[in-house]
Amino acid sequence: MPNRLLEDPHGFKPRGVLFVLSSPSGAGKSTIAKRLLREEPDLGVSVSATTRPMRPGEEDGRDYRFVDLETFRRMREAGEFLEWAHVFNHRYGTPKAPVDEMLAAGQDVLFDIDWQGAQQLYQLRGGDVVRVFILPPSMEELRRRLTGRNTDTLEVINARMDRAEREVSHWDGYDYVIVNDDAESCFEKVHTILKAERLKRSRQTGLIGFIRGLNK
Image (cartoon, rainbow, N blue to C red; front, side, top):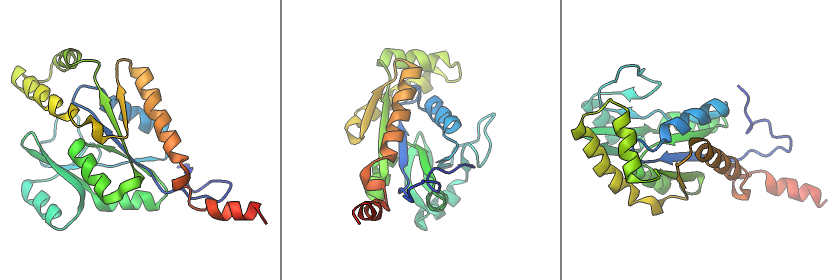
């Protein structure tokens, strides 16, 4: 697999970006995340552990790491999560070890987590975390998208809409906020953010030595 971090011609080894995507359900986050992974072969992805049941078409270890409640609690108490949250009667958490392994291998890591997880991750890893929040064009459009899936009952849709309102209220805890009224444009903005964040001076370890070499 090509690795831009380990092949820099100037000898720089940038610190990896912990790239967080958050949005209300139905705002397009998952579609953007999947496309990022297709177009960025060296981008790692954090696979969350969850106590919710596996859905048709999902695969353990690819979509989520499916665990029972007792296992989740043991992992949490052992400090194995970078972040965790209680969502819709289920627990979700980001295992720490796989993320650290990807960073050590020179990969940036993509996170598909909510505002609670983004906040916890930022508290732990600070400036290496880049937080992007994706908004729907309107709440009416969000409801239309959720209804159009034909996968949830009206009760579930209403619960998702209630949660969406709470999630949107945390927009100011993110570094970037994008309205997804056009899928292509939204993806290009997210991709541009990732590429720009990789180039930040603060991430370029080895830059000082390179500058000193220029001034000899």
